[in-house]
Image 1 (cartoon, rainbow, N blue to C red):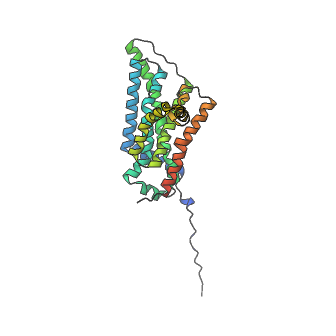
Image 2 (cartoon, helix red, strand yellow):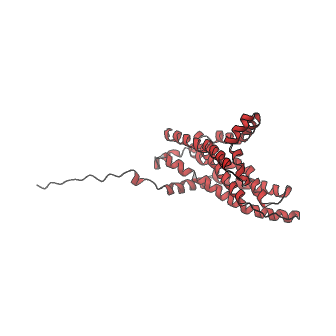
Image 3 (tube, rainbow, N blue to C red):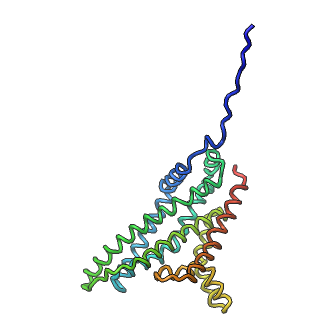
Length: 258
C-alpha cells in the first residue's frame, strides 16, 4: 500500500500581499483629482488667486514679487480646505470602508492621503508663479508703467513652504475631526480668533507669537527667518500639524467603519 503525504500550502504572510506604498499614493492622488470636489476646489483656488493677483497689480503696483505674495490672501483659506476635503470626502461618501477593506492598515492610508494635497499645492504654486509674470507684464503695459521683475528667491521659497504647511494643517485637522463643514469653519474663523487673542493682552500676544501659524510663518514670507523664528515655526507645526495628525490617526484606527 502506497502512502501519500499531503503537504499543506505555504502560508502567505500579510506583508507579501501588501499594496506597495507608491501605489497607495497613486490611488489616493487619482481619487483626489478625479473627484468633482477636488477639481472644483483646485479651479476655484486658481481663479480667485489670479483675480486678487490681477487686482493688486492694477490698483497697487505691477511687481512680480508682490503679485505672488498677495495670492496668500486666498491660499491661506482654500489650501487648508483642500487638505480637509482630501481626508473627509471618503467618510462623507461612505467609500472609506472599501478603502480599508483593500488596505486594512489604516495608518498607511492616512500617510498616503498626505501626498495629493501637497502635489496639488505644488502645482498651484508653480502655475501662480508663471501667471504672476504674465499679469505683471500685462498690467504694466496696460497702465503704461514700468514693471518690476525682481524676484526674491528666499521669500518665494518661504511662500511655497508656508503653503505646504497650510495644506498639511488642513489634512491634520480633517483627520482629527472627520467632518468637513466643522473643520472648514474652524479654519475660516481661526485667523480672526488669533487676532483677538493677540490684541487681548501681552500674554495673548506671546501665545500667538508661538502658536499662530499665520504669525510664526511671516518671517518665511519675508525671506528672513532666523533661528528663533524657525523655533517658533516648529512649535506651531507641532501643535497644528503633528499633534492633530497623530490624534486623528489614532481615532481613525480605532473608529468602527460600517
